Image (cartoon, rainbow, N blue to C red; front, side):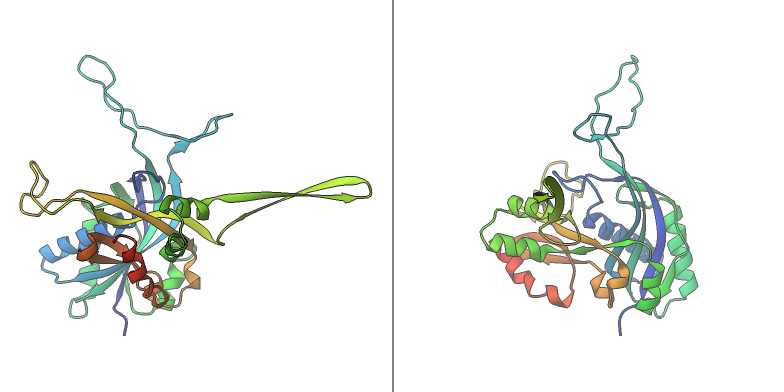
Length: 303
């Protein structure tokens, strides 16, 4: 039997972090959503509720990236915030921060809630979300009433209309195993190719254009974790003085936005933490049956 699923519907988040990796701007990284669920779990544990959140799914209902493209511009520009002036009235140094406003639903796989009063758990979740908890670095403006679901079909209906973010790292693995560089493989799946055909009809030239991508579907780059690039140790002025420190770089792969009605099981939606000590990988991955055989192939790319 599948674990109960906690649904937090229609979280409206203001000024979330859209800089999902050092070279991608868009939907917040999966590490942000799993991190928010983990923070919620720790706050519940601190209030005497021994719950454990094992997986997180995110469904986007609305996404507004704070960018601007003026008439005749070729590229988009980030819409920045106006910082307060200094004491002498001058404008302080400006650091560009990619922001977005979004409306999402979170689905959290729960353990240890069967013996807890359900209404008390949901009340605590609502209180914590209304207090000081942030999501992806943004402020929670409002949200729907949380609920516990044990039937995935009923839950799936409440997620529509929306787009669930799923993992497509197998596309990157296949391209890199065939000899492509990681960046070339990523761009190859994101590029749109335009083709022009000219045909003669009754002495007139008819020109038709077609556009396509390498893989059908709404394929996007997503940040799904970190790769350690230094040995574990202690660093001066590190945030947590008791935890070992290491430098790391973001791992970016491919994902896909797809409608939840296409899913038959919770595992097609949920993401989980995956730690691989031998390869220094800290990942957010899915455990769908067709993806399990790609784990070893993915790890070999970092050896």
